[in-house]
Length: 73
Image (cartoon, rainbow, N blue to C red; front, side, top):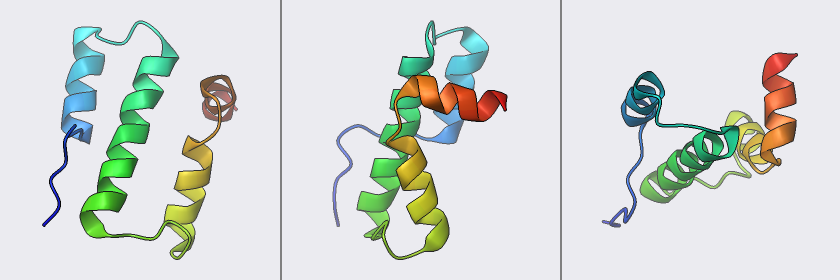
C-alpha cells in the first residue's frame, strides 16, 4: 500500500473555499492537481488509459489562466 504524503480531497477543498483560504486561482488549482495526482497514485490509475481520466489529467496540466478561461466559457 502506498502512503500519500500530502493528502487532498474535495471535502478539504470545499472547506477551504468556504473559509476564503484561496486568494488566487493558482492555489485552488494546485490543490485540484494534488488531489488528482493522489488519486492516480492511490488507485494505480494510468491516466493514459481511461478516456475521462486522460482528459482530466490533460486539462489539469494547463496553466491556471487557461483553466480559468475554460471554467468561464
